[in-house]
Image 1: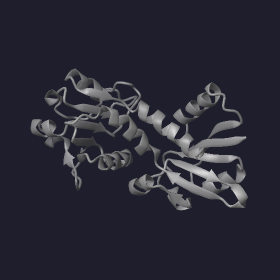
Image 2: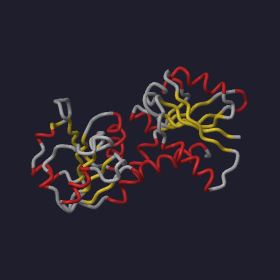
Image 3: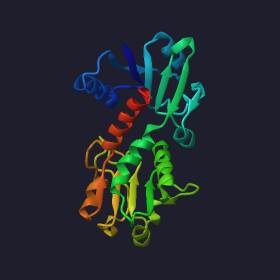
Image 4: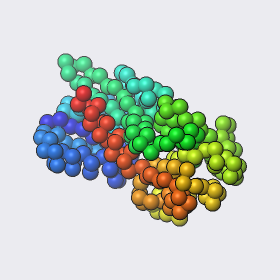
Length: 247
């Protein structure tokens, strides 16, 4: 039996558990299980692995994406630059434990964004500057797309929502929401920008996937913009984890 799982705290609802359980059943993948491991302290990862010799891989969520890094033998380039790990491969062969960390958020975002890009999509506005924004910045840098970060309160290397003008929106035609605005249960919230200046040239991407169409996406779509939510990104990064664990 090969075991995989998710560490985080709390773990009341898990996309990963449902995704992998259904994957194993639908693809008739035998002798594999996916479990939830709600550990509050990152230090407990060592005891968790020791107690589960069949453990081959972990997904990592809040609050352990950063704190888990010192426990790893290696991390990939994306995880190192972003400063966060959300996937760990575990090799317990020959009585020598080897843990390698990855960031699959970057892969999921990149692969879901690239098919939507057109020649005029050269610059992006990133709404929010938290952990999720780090993966977005990494991908935009990789794709050669310059960006401005937009925040509510004054911060270095960022502009305020109130500073967004028609001229800025004419220049920055990719809009990426990395905040929880519009997520359940706050369905009526959205990034406060002048939506009347959006056009069919704009691409609005929301990392939120529940609901499928946030107020941000609705307002952008009403102006003719192309829209995308974060659901495909989630599926892609989950599939990337499976690839990592089996390569």
